[in-house]
Image (cartoon, rainbow, N blue to C red; front, side, top):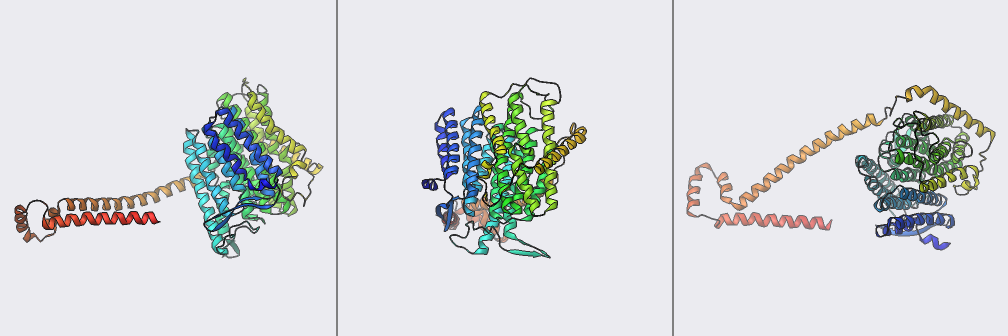
Length: 600
């Protein structure tokens, strides 16, 4: 098994990516599925031996492959769900180009979460942003616009992360191993504002990572982008970007950070509240990504072994049930052609596969006993209770109530409300795919030791999820969610969207950027006009120096100069010398400029 330490999981998927353009659609999707299953096998069999594969780049030692409890879990879930996502895309009739960019996105994501240093992670981080943007653009239509916004947001996030890494490097001093993950996280350039002390490097890196995690105020790209491309693209997107950010958050704050924890608690409430206000199915699910990532950041921020284990267990579970919910919504959209819950009648039991997939996903994300979300949510609340963080505990409860309410709403409006309609059920291919993912949600919910076996620190803590206390707490949260739905239903019948924070910061950013770009553009245009006018003046002077000379000689000498011109027509003497001088000087300047650009 030691031979596996020389094979990065990203390379396994990259092989399928390279071959995709040369294969038939069936063979390409089949090979891609097998490559991702191979990643799962790699994660199950590889020994946990730490640093496994290194390289040198610009004087830094890159750890391309770090094998520990965290990277192994990420490989298993990224590979496992990726295989289901590829199969789902095949049965959704996507082409090889869609597959190629999807595999590029997965390859970059695997590279990022297997990294053992910040520079390697950053290279994958940027590759992931580029690949996912082009992946979104493949769908055309409104996905082009939202893809630009997505690209801009992630460019800003990547720049902030880079700034934090650079400041961290400046604080620790340059060395080949300076950027390795050493268990202390990112720090450096401490600043004190009264009683508040913080690290500028950690702040920049935290905000950059937080943007990918869709923290409040930097999240508008998520509900704007994920509903816009092909439904199969949304299934991929639900898995990788935000969960990669959770992994990076742990590397940046391995000992926890209460600011991160409370931000996660606020996200849990905020995401659930705005999901409740949505009628677009995929937009509703997108806000729930933000809310559930908030649960994960609570565990990472608390920083105890149980908190970190709960955060990564919830990451693992979330990919399964959130992917399943996007698959179920995708089936409805494919069959009906509508995305808004108020645009079609009650599906009822006419499509039992779609109904079953939705129910399993909804019960899992809500944390009902017997489903995987129940296990990891219990771990997270236990970790918060253990640290006596009462306010944070209640934030998680409020987020859970909102989750119950919004999925009661989803189920009611999709399957019960309105005139009954006969929706064609999922095709056999999609039935197999959603059945496999649903089996994972139920399997890890009932046989939780299988989940405990792959989450970090499993040998250092013990948690029994099936207790009367946990059952009672879940029943109360479910009752609260039902009450919220019943009370708010008159508003939900008409209310759509809600006033998000992007309604405030988007206009400010738009008009501020417009003013700045207008000022810069105006200055550029003035400089450009001056340069162009000067250039044409030089050309005219080189072509006919006499005209320029006549404008600069004293007025009393111009008649004599004009008489001289009549007796010596053409370019001779001084006129020829001036023209040649200008041509030669211009050529030398251009060569010097080209040489300077080349050596830089």
